[in-house]
Length: 466
Image (cartoon, rainbow, N blue to C red; front, side, top):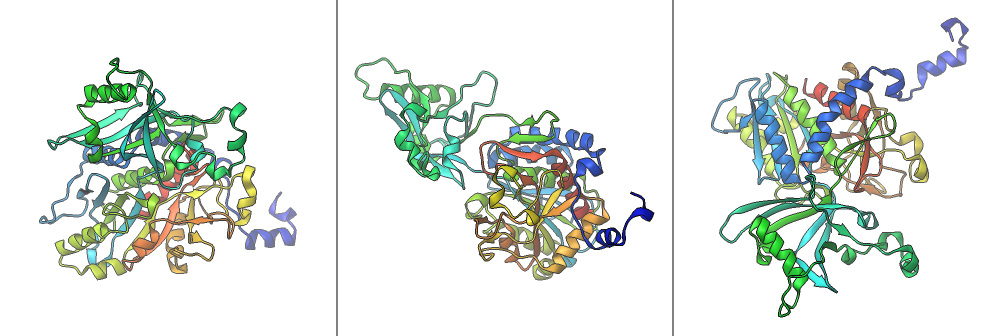
């Protein structure tokens, strides 16, 4: 329809109303660009199934890009690149900018922990000639989704002599995998009467690890012994070593393309490694930014950001204090002039379950990164609620740089809720808002994301650091 043919109402509608466009319709040229970018993202997902592995994968990429471990006694120049590892489970990376630190920095924080099954401290047992691991689930899982899912074993064991042993079983071609069993429908009548949240109970998330015995009639638990024997042959560990271990059972499947059009990515751990990867890649491409960048990939978000590797500790604050000291600046001035993105995913509108969303205030796949003003539950409980000024700054950055973005809440009011690291950053007197990628089937062993949304999140982070 030409401008001359438009009615007064149509012209007024175009002037006053607004909707977020579908990227595939408005910018189809981005489809190939997004697909190419996401090949690196899929590789990162496959390398980093745990927070420790994500840190190792990040360090490898950072050092290849010229980063060095930070030395707080040195004086760095604009364009210098450094990183700091916190207890092997969180990492901060920085590119020094042109402005003095007293004028603030640009922080981008994402988390690299994901829901999973952790082994209990004393995990190995045998029952009726089957050997198992006892697990304790980590984060907000829907327990029934973890039954009959092929699992891989990842982690680290500190042996009695102090040696650190890395464990990874189930990722390489030819590796065995592990599994939590479930009932057949023929015998599940009583189980079917349970609430869905108890379809599989926490103490039923027992991982099968073996069924062949060590042949010796004098051994009380021969199948358990055979499993321990195999672990000892491969890694030199004993049952007592599990007390000095962090071992996680995670989905064994690799990241894959989803859909006939290959427009989506399906993988475990996209919440929130999708933002961790895009933030890291934006950090790497920053050459001599106006403001010093601080990209933090942190742990423990899925259980409230607790512990000394989570954002509810002081390790980021201490890092900022040390940066400020390099230039004789007051960290309070640095924080007051800092802008932060809390980079985390949001729930994409799912037409199959549309009743738990409010369509006008939801985010959608293929419409870009999602800006989330507040999270929390019910009456915004436990939320950071970004100010209008902060929203305007971030929206302005994206629109000036041609980034496709949208705004959304986490579902309908009173349907539930969730949180991010934003409120912990705000505790440091820093302006912060959530920005990330819409996700379908969040927290499932196999989550879905749009390649176009991943790419525009990367573009948003690049613009933020520009």
